[in-house]
Structure formats: C-alpha cells, structure tokens
Image (cartoon, rainbow, N blue to C red):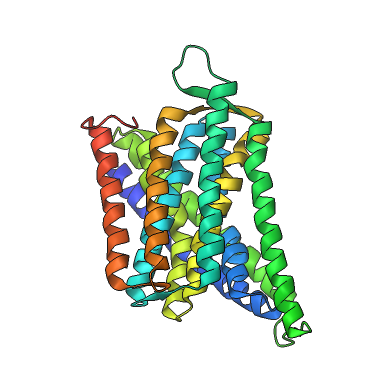
Length: 339
C-alpha cells in the first residue's frame, strides 16, 4: 500500500514539473520564433516539437542502452505517437471549439508523417528479412545501416522546413529581428524547460514502471499507455495552450512534428548508440497498423474544410479509448494480436 501511494505521489510531482517545463519551453520557443521570424508551421513542427519530444528520445535510449529492451522503447514511442495523433488534437479541438488548419499543414506535414510511418515499418521489415534471429519467429536484428534510413529521411524533413523559412524571408525582402527579445535569455529559458521536462517525465516513467511491477502487468502495456501518455504530456500542454490562443496551425504542427521526430529519430537513436537490437515484428506490425489507421482518420477530419470540429475531436478521443480497451484485452488474453 505504501509503495502504491509513493508511486502515485511521484506521478503527481512528475506531472507538475513537466507542466512547468512545458510552460517555459512554449514561452521560449514562441519568442525565439518571433525573433527569427519563423513561419508558424516551422515553429510548431521543429522548435517546439523537437523540444517536447526529448522525453520520448530519452525513453527509447535508456530502455535500449541500459535495459536491453528495444521493444519497450518502440512500444513507448508508438503508444506516444497514437496518443499524440488522437488525444492531443481531440483535447485541443474541444478546448478551442474548432481547430483551424491550413493547406500546407495538410499536404506537407501530414503526408510527410504518413511517409515516416511507412519508412519505420519498412525498416522493421528489413530487420526481419535480412537479419532474422534464429529460433524466433518474426524477430529480426535492427542494425545501424537500417536505423540510419529514418534519420536520413528526417534530414530531408528539416531541409523542406528550411526552404519554407527562406521563402518566407525572401517574400518579406528582409529579416528584421525583434530587438525587445534577448536570444540568449530565451535559449537559456528553453534549455531550462527541457531539463525540467526530462526530470518530470523521468518521475512519470519510474512511477509507471513501478506500478507495473507492483501490479504484475507486462512492461509493454505500460509503455503503450501510461509511459506513452506521460512522455506526451509536454506535447499536449503546448498544443492545448496554442489552441486556446486560436493558433490551430501551431498546435497541429507541434503534434505532427513531434511524431515525425519520434518515429525517425527517437526510435533509431538507441540502435545507433548500441549497434543493434532485436525487434519483434509480430508486436510492431499491429501497433503500426493502428497508428496508420489513426493517421488516416486525422488526415480525413483535417481535410474537411481544413478544420477539426468538436464532433471530429470527440471521434478521435473515442478511437483512443478503443485503443486502450484493445490493450487491456490483449493483457487479459481475450485477444492475441500483440502480446
């Protein structure tokens, strides 16, 4: 009983610290974006997204490097991506009543994200095809050359964002910086926010893993649900805040940019450090399939009049409830597609 109370308290403290760090990160990224005159999509998809995705990056590196459990890291990342795609736009859409997108977001970031999902699934397939683990069905070894492919694709994503920024600057004929903003102070604020986020989410991760051990449940279940939700809290806080301000493009770009970073950088990061690790395709494929379904639903709802309405936001949240229900059924043995 005491351990249970301890882990619940740790989760509460971790949530509070993460909230504070997210506030600092959102404020610093907004001021830096205005100082450097970055487009709204670049602000959400790169600056805020990469910063708020550091918890996911830490989770997959630690699980692979220290615990030798790449599948746990993948489960956390995929679960976080599903949470980002369904819960964050759903909550943001309810808070902001309707979430406005634009044509560039739908046809560039959303479709690039779909390519990212396909690329990571292809990397898992290559691991099973070219480096199968003997004595295990549908288990392959993910190597550095295979893991490097998603990273190179992220480089292309950054190049596209950089070109957008150059075109915006060229259209304005000059880059006039905001003299009222101190870049050094805002970069320090951003770094402080990152450190607080990492510390807060570490508390959430330890709480989730401790509760999993205490309640004798599979670690992958906690990775897909509690750990994933915990590491996605910075993304949700930032997106909800921007949605309240009526900045739907920044809110949605942060979600998509975070997921692109998670899939193309956070997942391969552990492999690039340790050299290789086993991946269970029978676990990864169904989860990536559900992520693909969630992505298609989000794309469809955003494309209708370039707005996410309250009814569509509720649909996304219901779909996430169905996902959590599915994971519970997997754990209890009612279904057997994943565990």
